Image 1 (cartoon, rainbow, N blue to C red):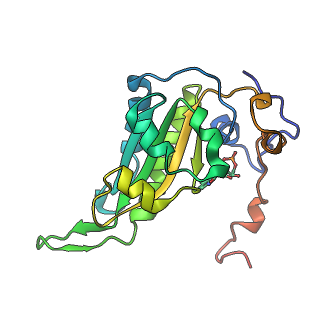
Image 2 (image 1 turned 30 degrees about the vertical axis):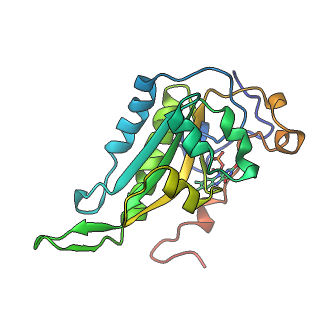
Length: 198
Ligand SMILES: Cc1cc2nc3c(=O)[nH]c(=O)nc-3n(C[C@H](O)[C@H](O)[C@H](O)COP(=O)(O)O)c2cc1C
């Protein structure tokens, strides 16, 4: 469905429409997602850049109605209960170490940065394919690690809900007003020429 924007997103500089068009809804239609459609999104994430091409991102996924979905959904905080209506859930983790040339395991300081790149690739591919992906930090990390067999030296960063954008009327009243794409700080507050903005 097309959502009428209360305040349209207008970039400070011209960018491809995918960047302003992607947003994070909480209302999803009842449409299910095929495994192939979900794997396409993870494929986009797979091609993200990473330091030394370590590819530290890891994903655990489930489709609504299956055991994987229930395992991920069970870790969500109550505020994110809306995500249980999504077509798919993906837990995004990364391996915090990498194997050095001498075979030892050393810390990988860019694991979280790289996992962030992978999640955005997933979200943009979802948007391009007519889905919407909504990242959530609101989950019980211990419960998720246990339910999803998180290996040692890994950390879960977020759970992503994916679905087709639905009718805000399906949401609890408190969430309905928020069902609109958000704005951004001006670019001048985020980027400085030769130095960071104060
Ligand atoms: C790491 C991360 C954690 C987030 N956690 C939550 C969350 O727990 N619940 C929620 O409803 N939205 C959550 N969000 C969604 C953000 O609020 C949203 O991305 C932000 O307001 C920008 O809006 P947009 O994605 O629609 O452009 C999270 C987003 C990110 C990237």
